[in-house]
Amino acid sequence: MSCASITLATGLILATASTAFAADTTILPIKSKPAIDAPFFFVNDNRLTYAYQFTATAPGAADKTGKHVLAVTHFDVWAYGTNFVNLELLKSDSRDPASPCLPTVGVPNACAGATEFYGLFRSTFGWNQIFDTKAFAIGPLSNISFEIGGDIETENQFLAPSKRDVVAGLQFAFDLPYKGYVNVAPLYYQEWNHTSFLTPGFMPAGFTGIPDGNTRFHPTWAVELNYYMDLGFLPETLRYFALSGRAGFYGPKGDGTRNGFTVPATNSTRTEINSEPVRLTFDASKAAWGSKYTHFVDIWVAYRYWQNKFGLDDGNPANGVCFSNGVNNKSCTERSLYSGVSVKF
Image (cartoon, rainbow, N blue to C red):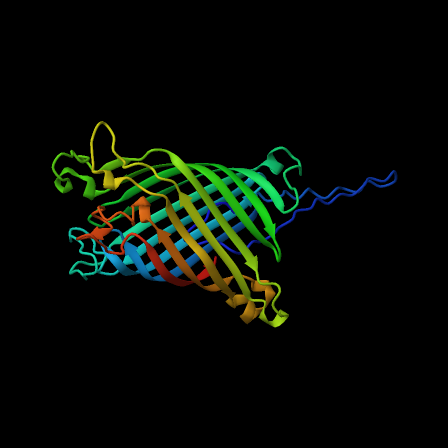
């Protein structure tokens, strides 16, 4: 699997195809059975997830907001690689209000909570498959792949974010015990976005701001990783649990200005860490109906850690988004319990 997503597919279905042959005899010819075409997708896994994030944040708006999350996830394996798609609809409570309400950190609002859409796509192309070799499977390294992908996001909040990014690079896949894996991907990262806070009306004297609020950040580096492992060392009667996690590290990307526009230096970004370091999954369908239904219904609990959210500098007292009256308002770093249920369809 390529990237780490806010919701990861954990079940894999392995399928094989065979071709039947029969030989002619010199006395009576026997018709050969038609060849069975190999499926295009060796794995085709689709899931619907409902989850709740207890203490999410919204930079400059909320230091703590509950979020309902509805996600559809697709993962497939084909002859030359993998594809991973995650589409999420997120609904905040009133502490992260929808437009036209102006947010105040820590204060509930009369407006309804904001609604956000987030989409993520990652594809890999394996070197072992492309070059028809096993040369890139050495020890725990199982493959090296080209990786490409992108993200899109929009939210009906006052900031009116409209994130778009592309990534490209390599993925290194390593095996773990008990059918587990670790994937590490060093990547090129380019982002475009929008924020109302950078428009001229919010600028101090001497700065132009960005008239339309549309940012174009500098290209930077990224490292994305994810892991999964069944807890196969548990007694047979308890082998319903798995550990997984993900992390994305994104380098500083500038302040987003272009065409000679200027904003205060405090808007320069810092390295961002967007992670779910640990998720414990209980295979409820296997426990209830047997191994035939492995990972048809998963119940899970996770921890979410997101430092310098969207690249905003959580450690700079002059930052007017992450600090209020010189005091850190705790809206730019997220620490939250996260729990949900995923159903295969």
